Image 1 (cartoon, rainbow, N blue to C red):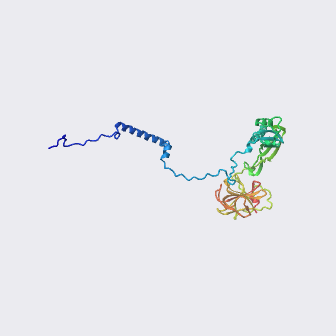
Image 2 (image 1 turned 135 degrees about the vertical axis):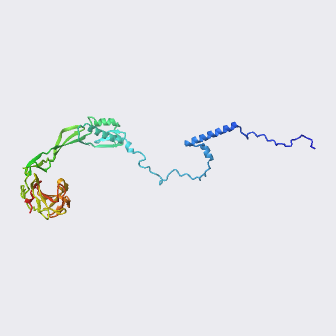
Image 3 (image 1 turned 120 degrees about the horizontal axis):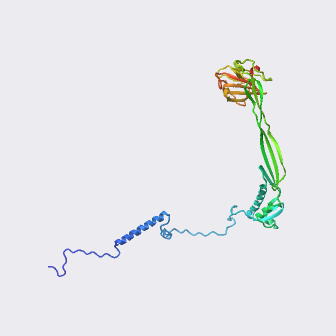
Length: 401
């Protein structure tokens, strides 16, 4: 039997408690919260991109860990001892002298007081420049002030009155200026005198052949004009001096007059003999000393020397003592050496295979100058030997011992 009372279902369900207020959020609240978080995130990103702090400085200081406060040390005595006193660097303040009132004094007479030394120096420069601008003409200008100008502290001249830069310049450059500014203008003109060409006939040269004995040089003259000015006004007449720096030297050309003979053969005594060689003695320039072609006309062309037989590599010898004046490769001559024996006598050695001397070397008769070869306008090895007197080639046979 069942006890009296309300009947219960056999399967009785537990009842759930009602939710407490505030523990569950509605869908609308969730959306608002999400939006707020999104805005906060976007704001933080913007502040970070601009380098700005996200939190206020006071909040950052509050969140930071407190630092240990260092022990207080007594403040130093603000009154320095004599040993601790420091000296200001020399350039810490501008030079007081530059801004000191300055008297402008000419020959002991103060003309006025300017606000600074810089202004006084500027007055002197501008006054001199003004007088120089009155001078017309080209050349080199040199200017001196014949007065004694002193820039002194204003305190040294208490009687001097204050003035301005413009007023002082008007006095210095006016008709009653106390200054004497002397200027010298020097102009130099250079002129040239052209040389002339002088032609002389030469019987030992074929007609149509010309030899330049001396190149011409123009003359040079310097004309120097000096003008003197005082305070921009010219004094007296200009002074002119003419100096000849170099005399003109005429060119000298020798022109051949000997008729061409196409059938002529060079001979041992062909051509005229030049002047006497004095104490000079000449030897054959090779050990063999065998001449295969003489001085004179050859196929319508004047052969200006002697050709010596030889093999490539044989020594070529100095014909007489002298100084080497040429050791070069020269056109049809090929490798060539020239030796100056003094008194206008020069020997020439051409078609060399090699050169063994240099310009300026001193050689004795029989010294090696180089080796025989076939350089230049040459068909087979041989030595071409010339003897020239004052630039003209003569038959070497007249001088060989």
